[in-house]
Picture 1: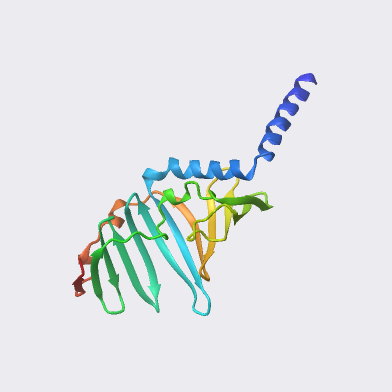
Picture 2: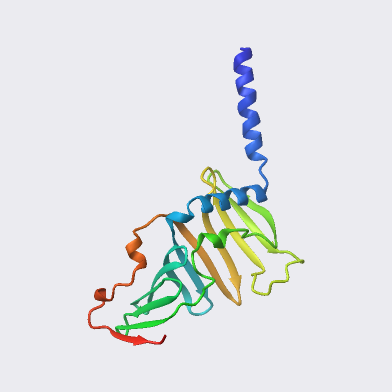
Length: 205
């Protein structure tokens, strides 16, 4: 009986430690998970909700400086691939390929964007379920970065500490990252013009 009681006490102590995690500790664990898988590359869906126009979804693959983004605009496919120096964009509407100098984008799905993601924010636990933590992040008074959104919402999966979603609103547009996973075929990051027969090429470099 003593052995049983001792084991039960240990289990309860471990459980209590888990329950006592602060929002900052949980977010830190999430950031560690993203760093551990950084070399594998990240896949995610990014939703951009624009008032009146609706929600536009982009599927993103990224590894280091290399990114692929696919979306549909009025039923036509748009594919953009960037190697960090040059970008290739195929527009299905006019069957045209545009080559241009790559531009940094805040919407890139780079795992690094989850690094110190709550820096400059006051984080609080909004709600908790048996599967996830829901955090509300409010911009701190000391945060003077104009480009930082006033609020963010982060959902972290229990057990894996994977980010299930991250939402932020800026200039009336709500951005949400979701469906995050790791690893993909590197060929997806190489632009293959043969996949778009008959396309017109416009080189703007």
